[in-house]
Length: 455
Ligand code: HEC
Ligand code: HEC
Ligand code: HEC
Ligand code: HEC
Image 1 (cartoon, rainbow, N blue to C red):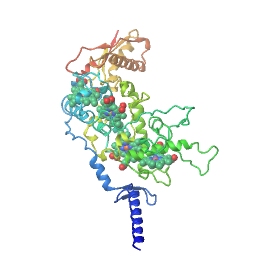
Image 2: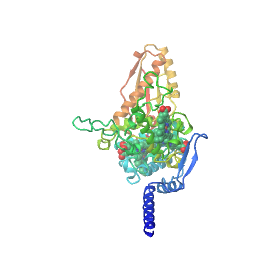
Image 3: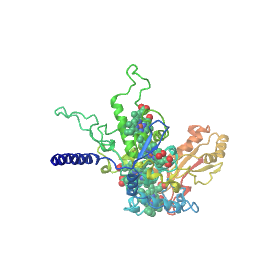
Image 4: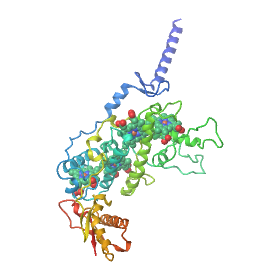
């Protein structure tokens, strides 16, 4: 009898241990669910507060923000020599931005990560990349506000205190098809890749969807296949699901965060935000990051010679709002991308000629500067045999070749304005680009000019 009992208890113990082992992979409660969508759509978000708290504690806090320095006093564009994007900030505010950028991107390397001892020089590729990244961040906070909202984006959103963001993707190496082995072509899948949640789904859904413009939708609009079906293949559906795995992992959310799972094609608010995010991502990669490829040293590029590109995880890093929705960007005016205020003297004009001014790095003839041609146009009208000589000037700061190109484009912009006003092309002569004296005191607005002389 006792033998039977002990046998039973041994069996129970074994079962219990087995169950405990089996359950060890499960999550310990509590589990909280919050309803996301309309009632009955099964759109709950499932969170374990214990794990969420540990996760939040493990995330380093962003560096403290120095208070804004105000916009009084001379502008950076007037004082410094080679400021092309942030020229409208006051010098104090510009320096606050430089300090913040250093904290966000290169806290260990410091200013020297982008600068040589001559701060105006563009010799380091990191400075060239950083300037374009400032323009990109402005674009993300202005044109893509539908996605970036009140949280906004700073360099820290992606970089988190490192020169190279930890979450970037490259085109993967695809093994060549080998007829002599059983392996054959993997058709870009069955690799249990981390980027797609260790599934066997295609491991590069990004090239087509986030750096191209492939159609993501796969659902047919009719109940039964019509003709050749809805034009979507199983491979296409697998690509879409692979991308969706990244969305889920990148934001640390279930599919139901964005979808009503009984109708994935239905539009619900978070899915709309995500839709804008996809288009924004294409803009980041296609307009900014990929065109910078040549600026990078070869050893910084991926196996296909491609630069590290952004995806959802680059900003989100496992959270539904990057940095838990901390509104950092609004403290940095230079990153918000408000319309730049041009720092230009009024045009000079008399019957003998005109002097027209341009913005930093710009060859657009501003309308108020174009007005400076009116007197000259009158003189050309009353003196039909006269011609004009157009000369573009540039400052001594920065690269000579790029500056000459800029001076030429400025001269062409003025020529176009003259032609548009009805002057015959034969009466407009272009002079070669002129360099002004080196200006050690900083970027002089007077050097960004075009002179037009009546001859
Ligand atoms: C991640 C790159 C990066 C880091 C780090 C950085 N800068 Fe800059 N810096 C730039 C860029 C880009 C510009 C040009 C901005 C523009 O064109 O609007 C610039 C311009 C400047 C200029 C203007 C120079 C001139 O005459 O044209 C000064 C001064 C400057 N930085 C100071 C600093 C200081 C001081 C630090 C360290 C606290 C620093 N920067 C850190 C990227 C950087
Ligand atoms: C949307 C994300 C994103 C934002 C925002 C962003 N960057 Fe980047 N940054 C990238 C990516 C992606 C790369 C390329 C990474 C690679 O090649 O691995 C990069 C590369 C760089 C590099 C070159 C680093 C190196 O060592 O090669 C610099 C410098 C840089 N960024 C500066 C900045 C600055 C300054 C800002 C803010 C004004 C900024 N970035 C904002 C995504 C971002
Ligand atoms: C962050 C929001 C988000 C998450 C999380 C997400 N999706 Fe999506 N999903 C979208 C968006 C946006 C689209 C539409 C893309 C487009 O049309 O460009 C989409 C499209 C789809 C489609 C195609 C629907 C159609 O109309 O053909 C399917 C299927 C899908 N998702 C499945 C999933 C699955 C499965 C998961 C979880 C693994 C998931 N999604 C997670 C945002 C999300
Ligand atoms: C440049 C950084 C950046 C990238 C890249 C990015 N996002 Fe976002 N996303 C944000 C910011 C910032 C917010 C917070 C907006 C706000 O405050 O309302 C956000 C919010 C969202 C939200 C709404 C979250 C909520 O709780 O309301 C969704 C959904 C989302 N992103 C999906 C995506 C998807 C999908 C991708 C990739 C295709 C993506 N995001 C790429 C910056 C980014």
